[in-house]
Image 1: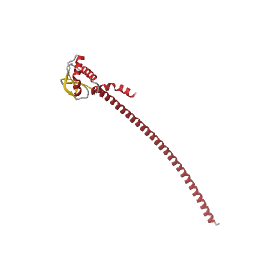
Image 2: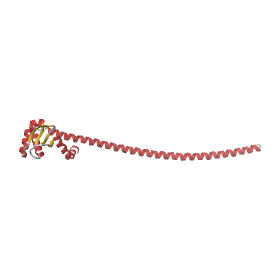
Image 3: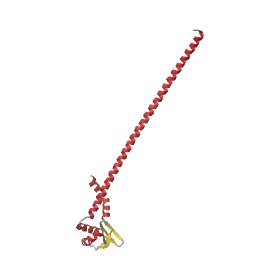
Image 4: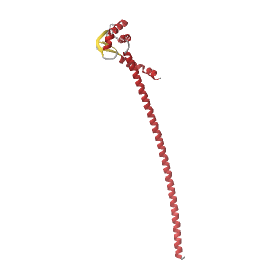
Length: 194
């Protein structure tokens, strides 16, 4: 081996050693950078996963609350419907009382509604024909009044209207049930739902 070959061999060996050192340092640096970004990616993944789980739990909670609220609304609507039906049934029962009970009820309503004792009693057509005279007679006899049976027919299902000039006092079953409903709806609900 000549001197030049030795020098060239040594230069090549030194260059190779330097290349190996640079490659080793580059590989080490690359490994550090990769580890750093892997850690960041893992941290970002964990953060996003926690956020997603938290959002999913919140969404589930909101859906559950909405479902409960909707269920309460449905139950309330059903209860309201049942109350409506109960009061409708009460009104139907009033309208279908037998003649004696109807006469007594209408006479009492006329007595209580009378202000002057001289009003006209308005009844619906069917009740007027069947019971009108008896209702007025009973109201006058029991209450010491001077009511008269109106020639006009009422356009209501049941009950009585007293008229004195332009003033009318509404004692129809529809109105009475509506007024009573406001007072006793809570009690009726207790009976129906407790």
